[in-house]
Structures are given as C-alpha cells and as structure tokens.
Length: 306
Image 1 (cartoon, rainbow, N blue to C red):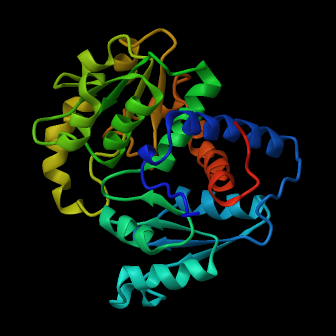
Image 2 (cartoon, rainbow, N blue to C red):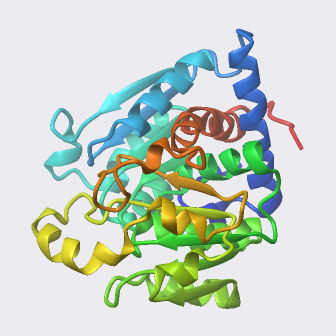
C-alpha cells in the first residue's frame, strides 16, 4: 500500500481530520496524566529544515520521543540535501531508512517532488503555500475551548499568506465560514479562493471581518524570506492590527489565535496575548498533541481510531 502523505489539509478527508484532532485531545490527556503511551517505538522521523523553526522542531522532536520513537534533525547545511542531489533521489534513499519524513521548506514543489518518490509518509512542516500542521493545532484548540467549529464564522486579518491559504482549506474541511481582511495586493492565492467558493469572503475592512466572528486569527506581516519588504508592509498593514477593540466587535465568546512568533505592536497590539480571549499559548502547545495524533495516524499500522 502506498504511504499516506500530509502535504495539505486536503490529503485527509473531513472525517479523518476530525479524528486526528479528537485523538490529539486524548493524547494530551494521557500526557497530562503521566500515562506512558509508545505506539511508535523504534520508529524514526527524519526532519528536514530548509527554514528555521522553534515550534515545529520542538513539537515534532518531542512528539516522536513521547510516542516512543526518535527524530533526526537534518539541515541542508549538514547534508547533501543542500548540495544539488535531486530531491527525488534523496526521497528514495531516506524513505528506505526512515518511517516518516517531515519537511519545512520554501517551495511547495519540494514536498510534492519528495512525496512522489517516498515510500513512507511525508508531512508538510510548512511551505510557502501551506501550513497544515498549524491548522490541526488551531482546530484542536477551538474544539477544546468551544466545541465544534462547524457553521461558525472565522476572521483572518492580515496577510494572505500560507496560513491564510490553509485557513481557506480548513473552512472547506471543517465546514465554517471564513472572512479574510487584507490590504490590496496581499490577497491569498486565487486557486485556494476558487476551491472554497462561497465559504470564503474577501473584505478590505478588518472591522467588517471581525464583526460577530467566533474566532479571529492573524500572523506576522512579514514572513520568512520577505524581510526586505518590511517597511513597505508595515505601512500597508497598519490598519490591520488586531486590538482588544477589534475583538470587542466579535461574538461575545470569540477566541483569538496567533500561530506565533508574534510581533507585538505590529500585527497585534502590545497587550493582546494577555487578553483572556487569546488562546495562543494553548494553540502553541497543541502543535505537540495534534502532530502526535497525526504521526500515530500516518505511521502506526495498528491505528484504528474512528
């Protein structure tokens, strides 16, 4: 049987995605109760990082260890990966030695090219297009705090970046309405919008997006690789700062999320992460639990959770 990959939220069906995030809640409970659970004993995850990382590296590495396995950190600086070996060749060799591969990269094609030649599951740890593991954590966090997100309204405020693209896929898979507020010229990719149809609404005014929303989410205005655009972006995005006043426009039980790292005073007001409506720290922790559930789903052949 060919390996299942997780390059995008669309690689699992809606039922499977829900199963993974529910399982994330269970695995979190096991860890909180100190229960040893090691279904991935003797399994090895290879982690390829072309982009630097805090949460992705710590969560995958700790997650594999907690599941009884091991993780190997591979940077292009220390391997042949950065020296012109075709991606497909690397995939053939590495997938003969490893049980799964997580890749954090720039071009999304790196992931698809690797997965095409890999005999083991390949996981997108972030690409310029998508960040699906983060959305598993976000959806788990919403589930824990508010129950099902189905039929709810989510506001994405800021850059139409890889996180925004992934929120569009989440709207399709988890069945919620998404309002995206971004400055002109910073829209998410049209192919993602086309896929979502009337589930997603694009607006310019962040206040309109925030109104009565059950979840408001944002991200840094300048992503990795765009540093030279910082000054120009700050000017364009200034009206899109998420503040407590903006949250006040949302539903009374609204939550605020940020995938971190956060630039206080830019995309969020200085005090926003201290607001009781912010669940950013739970969201960050849930990267660990949601990814453990994903690893179990992809790597453990005995996985039979509905």
